[in-house]
Length: 424
Image (cartoon, rainbow, N blue to C red; front, side):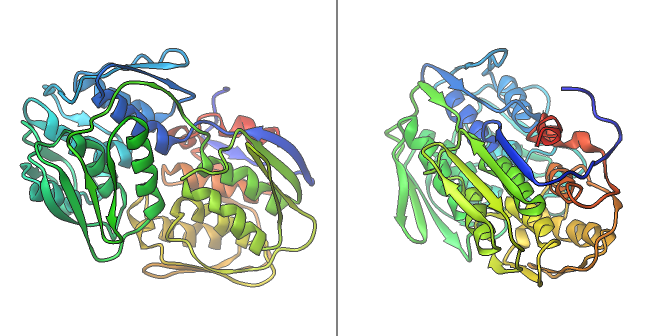
């Protein structure tokens, strides 16, 4: 990969005819890394994503006593059988939400105290819903940041387990964090929900990875989950499936520029929710094809705006919002309040940058309305948010004068994104 400049001008091009592969899933990679680290015996992870977020997880695990060999594929993970060490310095999770939240719960299994911290933005991302649930299971946690945010100090010494309630209205990652470490609790864990739950498919993805490594975990009923402490993880060879979140960008490229783009290596029966972008693009007027391990999007006619609840696939909101700029008629994206506590406040960022392009965009507390207008070029601020950079680059496929500031922020989840983008 060649180094990226501070500002990258996107060159418009004609109708697309492309076939691409996307990297391994960040969501699966970070779940599998933690589960393999906790397991008894060695695991070999194949096709793992090498990105800022997964490096943050690997460094955190190394500080806890599990050093991952990620020099070549497959990655070698020597499991510690549920016994983490207590690091001497805080774990720096940067701005990786999965790393911060998953390791906060895992720190309860450390031999002594663990401090989990991150960059300036991570210190603005609340984690108190998670720490309250861990305290309900008998752990000792102390928030040292303002407003329920990191740093957080976890006493370690083990997770007693039992029954607790959790507020998952802001992030399903709080639920996944508890679930991933729950097989090593002293007693079985039952987790009940307070209020609504966002991004439920990501909880199902967590359960799938846990069961793949031998845990016994699942839904007790529609409002609670349970995890046995008798079935723990065992090391194994494990393939990391392709990232459905990353696949959204080439799919949306076809919707914007016209033509056809096929993405290979996808698991069509995936639990990753962002593959639901295919149904939304079909509603907007695209044609969708699916094969055994691939999917393709094509567009020959016009796009139409839609009204859609995207609570189940929030990471795809940004790309779809840019597609909506090219539709005939307005688009309303609803039930996505959790976008405000992501890498940036994504609803505000989308409103600001879409307006730069000449679009009328209005963000509410949990929704975004987009009313297309004649577009113009603009320099897009990305807020150190990988999905802002990748999504707004799509607009430059058709509209001249689109400049992406700080394009290297894509290294968080897809370091090679712009190399692939240039070849579309």
